[in-house]
Length: 309
Ligand code: GLU
Image (cartoon, rainbow, N blue to C red; front, side, top):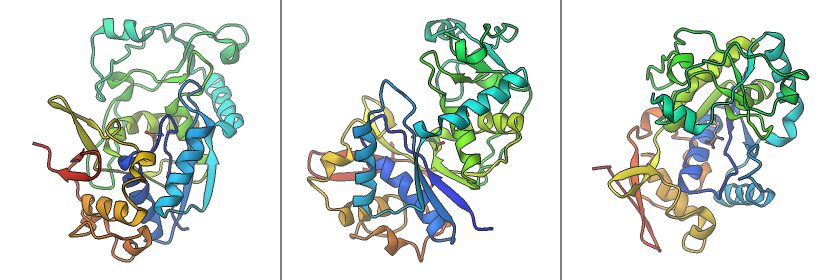
């Protein structure tokens, strides 16, 4: 059976160069191996996602030269999300959780992604009459305690005890939106995804997602996490989000020039010579992809990249 990969950007803002790099690497992973590559627009956050951002994302990816075997929009998959919540409820895994950000912070324990860990102290709370649909608080899913062993495609060891490291995940938010970990696991399984390629910032989320797959009896895909493009924020580095988005970049770069720059960033070309994604398919191999993150700078007209100090 050929592999199935996916690129799953959140449409909470415009695409940025790191979005295109992630899209390019996931696309090359499948286009070079004869598999299928799906695009899933993750638009479940009602406060931040707008139809205009989804349309803009589609346009920027097409402009860049990427094509997809199938495109889905996560908000149209609500039925499969509801079925998964029903299943978790049947299994006795769901409970309401009133702890907000301030409560987590007061707990004072850091999670691997730099956020605050939750201590699972509400596990015994019952759902209200009417179940998760009637719950006005966030709903969490009780994970099994203990380590989940996962190895990244690059060989990196992602072993983690997610119930301890992060705490039980929120699976339904206070506003009723299905939360990221559950949606991603359910949608990948429903689409038959066998390979997940995504940025290193999500590596620490993998064990929680595998734990949910095991509870729901869903298969676990293989995972590969790649380099990130960073920007300087004071003396720290953050994901390259703020400096410039793709819609603004398009006034300064044509698609071939931007693809050449990103291919050079990723180690797929010795120079930033203009190219199209399809020019990179024949020689693509993960062994050639740079592993270390890169700091990218935007001077208002051109992008440049260098090692982080
Ligand atoms: N939608 C997530 C993001 O844009 C990625 C989901 C995933 O690849 O697991 O950060």
